[in-house]
Length: 158
Image (cartoon, rainbow, N blue to C red):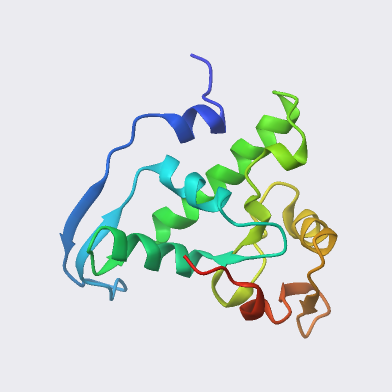
């Protein structure tokens, strides 16, 4: 059985899930939790124009409001954002699309404007794509790229 591509996984039939969650263990969030279908993450990420940014936190807030839930699952959000990134890279490598024809996943940051080391090519590739669009990168105390400088000034309103 052949392994599914990221694009196939992203486009597979996932359904909207809304469920009540009780706090337990380290999981402090509780109330009505939403998990939107994976393609909705890509639709939202495609709306971020060049020079602008969005964070996973804002994505979760958007879906919480859209579906009238208390919160959107942060774990699934991270998984689906990563899947969008992998599918976009597949679109270039396997389908011959150009960078301006794929979902601009690099414009989606982690909370606090932090870079996503799990994106294709790691932090270095993420930094290169952001710098190409005019963003400055802040370094950590150890001198490694950590977050987009003044990312708050580039956030889109969704």
